[in-house]
Length: 103
Image 1 (cartoon, rainbow, N blue to C red):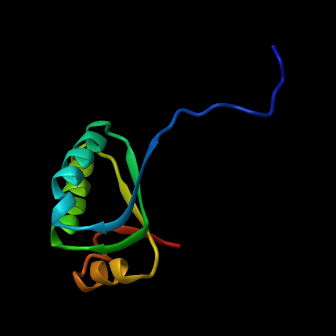
Image 2 (cartoon, rainbow, N blue to C red):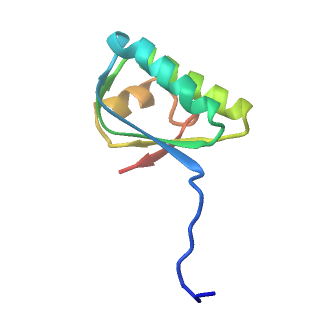
């Protein structure tokens, strides 16, 4: 057996990358995609660093995803830039609800 310094680790975190404006126009798509991700039962990193805007329907979808993951003993981290989207999450009082990684 070869003595290698490398090993392979199974993916335990699901990466979801979002960009642009998240509003009522994409609510159904978000809900469907988030449902599929939650069903995997893994921790989720939602990369929102390129999201420029989100409305209450998008915030609701994120809260729903967080709730579904918690029911499966999985966690969620939002990766965000300090931009308008982050400001809306902050105004909604959700910076203490979500685990947020600022980039």
